[in-house]
Image (cartoon, rainbow, N blue to C red):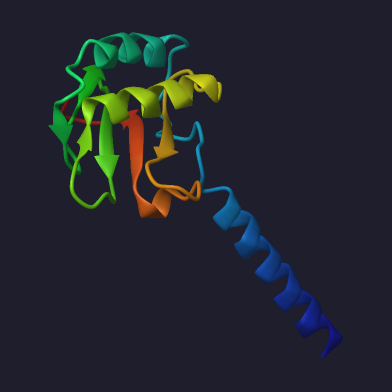
Length: 121
């Protein structure tokens, strides 16, 4: 009985840790490589008009096979918002890939800008 309670507490603790870890992050495909890819991508993103709008899955900008795109959002986001999300990833220390939540609460399940490897840029 005590082992079951300990196991349950451990699993609950891991679930909490996993949820908390889903905020801004530098995770991505094992094919994410390069030290300055995100900086190069940011240069392209910063050149986009602030008033452009982007929906889920649209490749906003790419450097080789590394692209920025939105996921799990409702509606669209503007170029101005996308610029801030990419800058947030740089400020977080990301070099190539990562995700930044688009909604308050730092939870990518509620919407995110992702920079990751894609097979067809």
